[in-house]
Each structure stands twice: as structure tokens, then as C-alpha cells.
Amino acid sequence: MQFDFEHYLKAGHGRAYLMAEKEPERYREAILNACRKDYTFDMVAEGSRAFLTADLIDLFEDPAPFIDAAKESFNSSDVDDVKNEIKYLSDLLIEFGQWKTVLRKYFSLWKKIKNTPYSHLAERSSHLLANVEYLAIKLVRDRSWKIADNIVKDMGSWYLSLEEDAARRFAWFYYVLEDQFGEDETRTHLLKMAETSPEFKAFCDKDLRYEEEMPEKSQAKKSSSSSDVTEKIKARNEPEETDGLQMLIENYKPSDEETLLAKLESIEIKEENEKYWHHIGCVILEHDETLPVSILMWVYDTTLCSFCRQSVVEKLIESDALPDSVRNECMWDANLELRELVTDHSSTLTILT
Image 1 (spheres, helix red, strand yellow):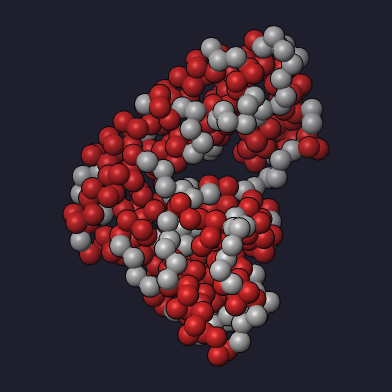
Image 2: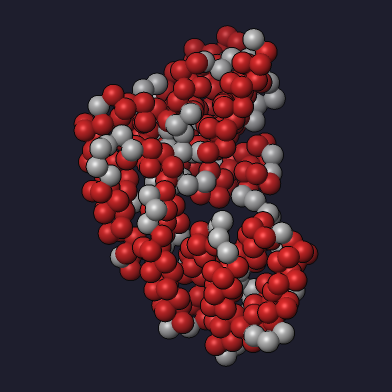
């Protein structure tokens, strides 16, 4: 199946890059829109769309209009408490070295957090703390203890300012420090600083004390097998009715290929009916035996979820059926693990030949 550029762009699909590479000016407005708004389907499972957007921007001689569009959205207070916007936009801006812009947003978020009641910050609908932590992680990557210490002080200072006892909020940041500086050095450094700094002590009391309860030390797609994550996506998107299509897939026979493909191609792919097409895609990916390439390619071509796309490519590689065209598209996919997957596979083929 073939879709328009906007579909592939929103899907984070590498086909968007190959289309724009031939005639970038034709897609300028669509790429500008992608600089203003996050299209990530599920950031936990997929990662950020920013890397594909950055590659598309690089097709133009002057990146300034695209960077300005991203900065305009990023600097707006409208994105401060939105789930993924700040994460995506900061990823994109950092790709173009806009560290000062990210740092200013980090400070503005802390100002807002300190003026927001903890009862609101603790609500599941609030993303302020998660957003400031994400920026903190970006700012500390590949940098010195000086920057990390300032961030830890900010976090500890906030804990101290609270009248009520707060749950730990920055354990993810603590893991990143371990990843950056090593587990032993991180623990030793923080505890030493805590001897004289109440801010460090407050941070350690919350986010270092419960080390054994640390969250998964990677994104879901890295900490779980593909089948585990696919099962979670399937369960989350269980529709009330699949019109018998799920039964047809689960009881598939070779003679069903034409009928099944026709039914799949009749499905309208849009965000509003995600529970239907996303669930059907997961049913295909979980089939006990690998289904025909045509059925797997329907998922690859249509899905807005790059994790499901990655699962298709894994199955195609396992069955030695990965088309060169798909390999080329995956080299530009927004999903960096998918890029790595096809790169490693290509290297293996080169060695074998």
C-alpha cells in the first residue's frame, strides 16, 4: 500500500525521507509543521521522532526557518505540561546545538513547578516534573559533574520546599548519572556532597535510598522482548469488535492470503481508530507462524507505530525475506533501533558474502 508524505512523516517512516530527498521543497510546509508538533505515537516504545525530522531538515541549505519553528513551539508555555512535546522538541533542537534554548526552558519549568501545588504535580495528568527531568537528562549527557551537581541541587531544593512528604520523582535521572559517571562514583559523590549540602541530602533521601526499586534501566523496547511489548500494545488496544478479522488471522491458511489482504487494505488508518488497526497489527505480529510477506508488509506500510514496524523487519530478517527497498527505508526511520537493526544485518550479509 502507498500513502502520502504526511502519513509516512507522522509514522516516522523512512520512506518520508526518501520521498523528500528527491524534491525537498515540495514538502517544506509539512516538514515545518513537524518542527512545531510532536507526531510520536508512543515515545516509551518507539523513542523520539526528532531524528527523522532532523534528517529532513538537513535536506535544505538553510535550516534556520525549521529551527525557528521548533524554538517558537518549544518556548511557548502551552507545551510545558504536555506529555511528549517538550521531549520531542528538545531532542530536535539539541540535534542543531540549541543548548541555550533548552537550558532556558529548564529554568522556566522549575519556576513554574515551584509555583504549582504538589497536589497538582502529583496527579497522573500532570507532566511538569517528567518534562523537567527529561531536560535535566539531556543537559547532563556527556557533561561534567558541575552541571550534574547544579541539577541535583535544583531537585533537592524542590524537595525541601514542600510542606508535605513527596514520593521520589527523579529516579530516572539518578540512573542516568550512574550511566554517565559509573555506579560507584555516582553513589560516592552524591553521598559525600550530602554531608554538607541539605539539597543533596534531600535528593539522596528520595532518589538514591531506594536504589533497588529503580525503574527499568532502559526504555520498554530495550528492557522487554519484542513479543512482550507487542502483547502490551495489543492488550491496551483491545477493540470491542474486530469484525471477524482477528479470527481469520489466528486461523490463517495459505488459501486465505488474498481475502485477508483485501480486508486489511480496506481498513482506514487514522489516529481516531487506533484501537482497531493497532490491535490487528499486533495479532499479525503475534501469529504462531510467520505470515506471508504481503501480510507483514501491510503492517510495515500502514502502521503509525515504529515499534510494530521494527517487529515486522525482525520477522523479515529471521525468514531471510527483507527486501532491499525496505532496508534502505529503515536506514532513515525515526526509530534508531530499527536503523541499527538493518545496519547490523547489512554488515552481517557483507561478512558472509
